[in-house]
Length: 232
Image (cartoon, rainbow, N blue to C red; front, side, top):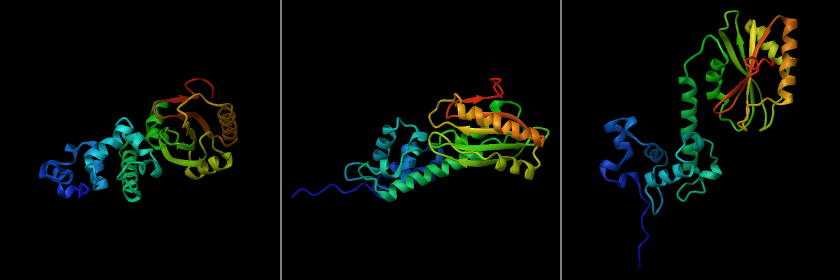
């Protein structure tokens, strides 16, 4: 009777092929993306090592880590050898990486142009699959006092209450604000609702002497600035 091929475990590989040992001996930068994922999942299936399985998963998203980070638990579990626990490990590992990326972004203490806002907010909302509305609160030197999430919506929109926006502005002592939200569709062109909301918040700020400097629509790769396009 033919015996089934045992599942490949990292412990059973030769010393030179073990990602964990390679990390210890040569450092984390020496590992490929597939080897790092292999450490997360620990083992492969009956026909593939953890590294081979990880390579196949990466190939399914064209070796793009950002795309892998967007995969759901259910999508990951379609791969032979990836159960719920391993799928959770992958999702958790990539989420930690995303959060670290946010923290590692250079702190922009002073806003000088729309691109500064894009660089500040893209790591936070640029690749989300739902809309989020944030506001940057600035002092009279255009330095960011606070950035705050105001609302979370669906794929096509989010509700924003002007009273909440300006309450935070008054509490933080801001003299100006910049609105920003993402478009999960990747299309940066503002909708009629975006134009209406911008004008509404601009008018509300006039009575409080808090200036609306810009409204930036952010996508994964680009942005739209109401101020740059002279539609503010």
